[in-house]
Image (cartoon, rainbow, N blue to C red; front, top):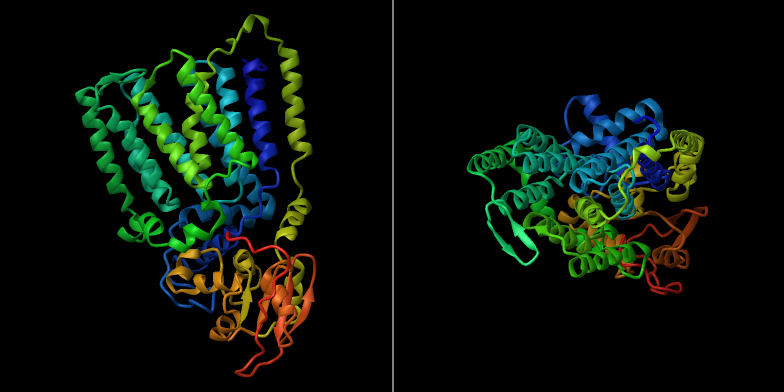
Length: 495
């Protein structure tokens, strides 16, 4: 099948993934992930309290994504930003090639499977970057492949699932999504019935026993981790305790149907509706459960659009099964080979250089200001922009930050609420005095920056297109009141 039309289509999917991930490098979490992994390799143990800030220094903290940090650190050590970019590419390509296999097995139509996966790629872009959750989605695809094989053949390597959940729990909190999906698939097999176009076929008794044992073993495997039950309960802590995290971090917003991503979700809803109304196709109860869970998760939080893309792709492939089947007798292998070489050559040619990746970092982080900070250490303590905390921690070990994107520990201590109030200029003088802030490193277009620039008690030490460094000139107890005048436009409510 070398140079077949099917191989060329798979190459096309890989090219789409390459295009969408080409500059996926600047995620604010990656920097403190690297710092944590460095600590692990240096001292042979995980950090169990805050080491990087002055606001919550020494507070207990659980590094619940420790296992996923190791690959990122190793590729950074070997190849720097290029290594991180390569790892992201490999992870995302692996996820979608696995999803392509899943869609093909579900639909029996390779063309439909490729189109379904390409659509899912665009949904998933919300999580493209050096993120630990990519490992979670890779585990999810493996889980779905195993369960699909078990459902279709009546047998499958269920023994792999408990070790998979053990790895997953130590890698990322998204293991809970996998456990919910496993439960949906397993539970719907205990039902026998038909409701219009939805039908359920029950598992056999041996299958039920195998699934029940696998589920119990998987739950037990979650507790094999350095933090015991604390790590297992962390996703619930996030959902029910970290209210500020959920309400103020951008990836936790609901889908906006006015932007491109929202319109893609709207297209999905229309396609599913028309398929249900116009086609005499059957849905299994398990498929319906997965789609409803995926839609709820993805519509409620854009962070989970990647999850929606994974669970909906096999169904989309089945909806598109009217695509003409592959006909090997008319295959143009030379043309396919030429197109494959063209795509591979394009990926090699357009592979981002280290300079291009560094330029992408420079546009989002205060790299130029960092050189100034090292040459002219600012008056401490310094207030920093939330998205820059990890970057400062990784690149200047002398800096103790006010906040970084480990939202949990700062929310527990009340620091994150104070930071949000500062962004909204809600009693900024009181908050700055509370922490004794003597310098501020913020983007130039933030309301706080504007207010401090126009306050006689502050002066600008450094400015570029990305950042402004301000220093307090009045170091006494009393300071001039920070005026609450704002530039045009209100500050966004999301970070």
